[in-house]
Length: 434
Image 1 (cartoon, rainbow, N blue to C red):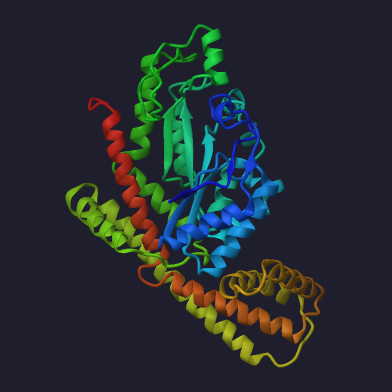
Image 2: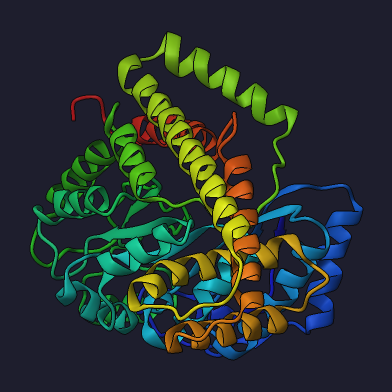
């Protein structure tokens, strides 16, 4: 399903036509409208993924913070029926917007699409992609992945700074930061964009019908540092490096090692999901090659679920013992504080997930006050009891998250199926001789 919470974008990327038809500023829907749309989807009986199709989900930080609170309240009240994914600008990783990522996590976001475009700063500058120059792209991707949200990304080959060596560099970057879903296309001068007008003024625009297909291999302008044929061959090389048999499995396995699944989602596995898994086992595990890479990906997912299940079980038992031994408050040393603060964060998340009757603001205020007292070495007995109970609830939910079919195994199947899709698309673009 899809919904939209804001429209428009405040950035001016020269290849993008969003501002031509949606405007150069962001307009949010009312909070009542967002809530109403969520309730309508729920009332229709739908459970599962919801794509919030905003042009830039974090384009209006103030408005989206309020919208995220509505989404969190709705999800908590209804036991997380939806898993959200969206598209956002890379300044999601900036210090200014750092407060939005925990809210997206608590709202149940599982994936976000970022317009990375090109790891080369010169190319980004040419695109007027200034927001990407203000953050460490690799660090931003890692931060989002550790929050339990998979990063999908768009990449563009063909900027005036690009050469035939840029294509494999883009593919290598996607592998280095573990982005399996890498939507890679050639630079396309969309009508009425600054890019199209500049190329027309420079006499480099080739007249061609714009199809809107971002996997078209027709070069629609004269490249600056390579020939048209070299640009096509570079595009084919990038696609083969990204989506040849085994490549997607390699990036998917790397993502499983970096991803930290969060507890803010329900177990909405449908019959269609099981049918998809069985078809995947047949088509990718029996019929197609490389079978070994496919089964290694699933095996890695299963092993990681088993490991996390054991870790959560031991952690829950350890916290339960600490709770039983708790008799009277005592001064907290620095070493104790270092172990208590991570438990406090887990307790805060567990309270948000398990006690929907408590307001988000009240949970945040409780966590902040306990954190202050731990730092001062003066937590009360009630503070410690609440902390241990909350963290125990967290580990119980994490244990549930990794029971068969666990979060990692489900993600492995999901990524394998995506990989098959991208491989089929690639085979339809790249000539056999390449």
